[in-house]
Image (cartoon, rainbow, N blue to C red):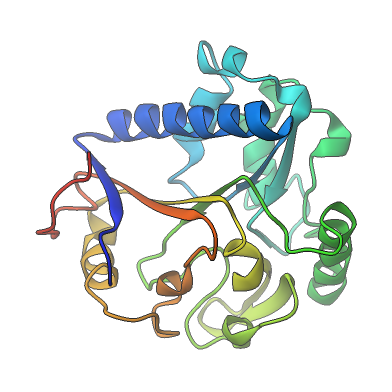
Length: 249
């Protein structure tokens, strides 16, 4: 990857979760101070779960005025919000239910609807909040799959080339399932974008992604390039075990 990436590698999963949560609070505090509000995009999966738990617990939860925070989601499975696989459901249990976010400021993707309808509805939500656009999210949290996908932007799916819509339905053949996802035009409009990865299973892809010289649809995560924002990579020691590049300060 060209340029010097902003990388932090933590010695343990505990340190990864604690330091990442503290960094996210710091970034959100900056948004609240500078713009009077903060919009944050949250991802699903196992990697951020411990971070959300820390954000919703003492002492961190008291460092933010959550009444001025709005929550969006990077993607969603086509399930009801009470389904164990729901990204919204996980975030609700680990974070939202523990802090003072007004229900009107929690913008979930309606996974119980058809993928097409859910994508159209979420696009309308974003365009209402960010008219005429682009959607300048303050903080965007993303994971990375062992195949190089992020959000629900998987290799060899047609949503990768989307240039106009901010939200797309996508069918993932190897999962035989549909998802709803933010597109790269929406993600790359973020001010602070953090990519989070943990565990040995991610190590080969972390090494591969950080060695490519140009973005490629074969590795969707390489298409995350904020136009007017910063990109931060945060790993635990296991996920970074194949890297030979230095840890950023």
